[in-house]
Amino acid sequence: MTKELSEYWSQLEGAVHSNDVSKFELFLDHGFNLDYPPPAFIGDVINAPVVILENNGGYSASLTPTEFPDRDAHDEFRDMLANPRPVSRNERTLSPYYLGRNYTQWLMDGVATLVNGVAYRSIDGKANHVNRMTKTLPSALFHQRWLQEVLLPQAKRGERFIVVHRWSRWNGAADALRVCRNAVFSSAPVSKDLTAHEIEAGVSFLATH
Image (cartoon, rainbow, N blue to C red; front, top):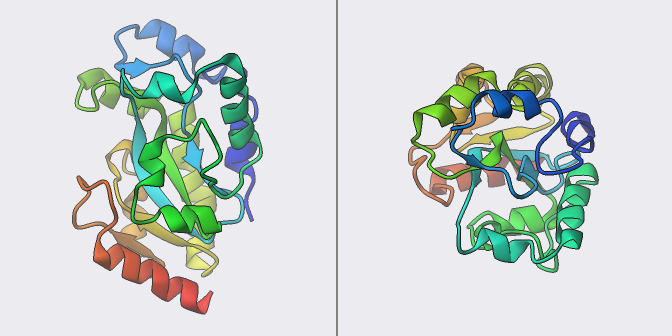
């Protein structure tokens, strides 16, 4: 359906996309942990008909390191970005966070994918520098253009349904979705799980897809 994001993140060699290196070097107090490959998206971003928009990856000093016990785990995570596929509980680098949500089965069935506005894991999502990076980080700007130039037209054509669960890290790019019939905005964006209304809207779209 669309390979733009997977092709972009297939260029990732370490934990930071080459387009972002200079920006992170410029703002050393950026508020993100860059020790591990970033969750730019989760699941089959190429084919999934439902797209869940989130802000950015989270970081836990106690849990995140356990998801990457060796260098092979870093390679495995980068492979998930380069070769998107439905979520599997056998993926040892997948954060338990994504396996404990009320939309997890969608991710596993390949009918939904989750895309973060900013790929990297924030240490403190409320830090001012995190907001600044949302507006200037090249990969974040790429995600914003993808939303407006690729995802929005797909939704307008009825090919995809967009669940806008969190939108502050999309830098206004998601605003156009408010008048799109194949999109729904959350009434509880602070919740880890989707609201009943979001789930119902997604189920209704999938029933006719």
